[in-house]
Length: 98
Image (cartoon, rainbow, N blue to C red; front, side, top):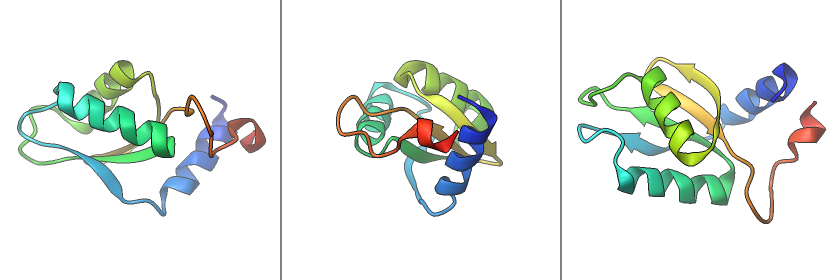
């Protein structure tokens, strides 16, 4: 992903609310499935790491990206944004963001 594409995705993420919340159980199989489904439906999602989570946002972002085959877009404080092109009916044309 290019710098311009990442910047465009960051801009798009400003208007979305977090839909995945990582809590005291950390990143388990259920959370990965929730993130996977959200990425398939929306492609760009925001995730919140709650205070009682056993890992910080950067570590959580890396692990969730690895497990969902997504790309990190931005990490700020306790939130992060990730992107993965949907397998069908893609909503975001990342090549047009270049």
